[in-house]
Image 1: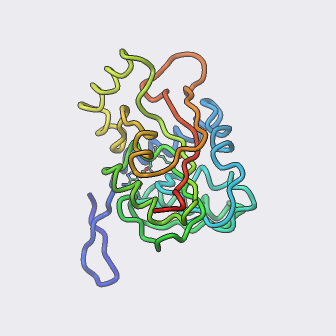
Image 2: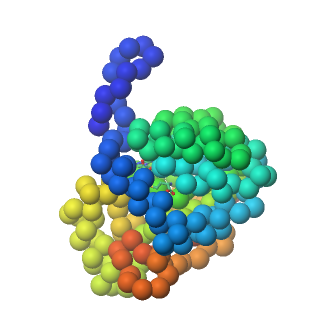
Image 3: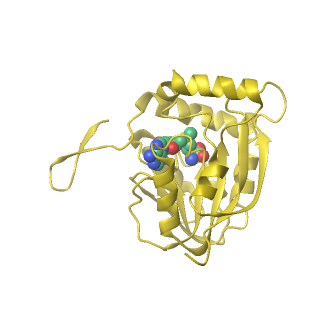
Length: 227
Ligand SMILES: C[S@@+](CC[C@H](N)C(=O)[O-])C[C@H]1O[C@@H](n2cnc3c(N)ncnc32)[C@H](O)[C@@H]1O
């Protein structure tokens, strides 16, 4: 963690500090847009969204240019300062208004029930506490609001799961900005009380070598109208 100063002059801590990973991700994520087909996935993730949207763990802002014009406003939370700087640059180029804000998924710095939709892309793998993060997403969504998610996670058969777990216990989180390979985003959303809408499992890349990051899920979940 890195110290930064607050308005009161007291040192505060960045909730996430992965400068090397941030620089690496900023490069490979751009290549993955075309090479891995991520751009198409992002279009499917965001298609049809409208109203006020919160994006959690926005990274370098690769979703920003793909929000449909029906979106009135995006508040993009990003805790890592290098990625947040890049996200702020991407926000200027976006066609919908995007406000990039520091903060962490486990304590979203926004009001309750203020958003029509929340976007989670490749972030539940990296948060410190999935349960708290999803409880926060639920808090900030209006009743009936939707979660659009695109996440990698557990899958690919027993040998792949063995590899994912072994990497999670050893080098992977340290090398990849706190990322975990064997989390189960759909189970996490269900446990947090979301109603699962349509979702589909896919591999990225779709053809060719299967990597521990390849098993993915893309879909929609909804905050129930009744508590
Ligand atoms: C693999 S990157 C994905 C970035 C972006 N969502 C995308 O689709 O390209 C993971 C992101 O999660 C962020 N992150 C890590 N821990 C977080 C937390 N506790 N709360 C919110 N974001 C977090 C990282 O800083 C990084 O931006």
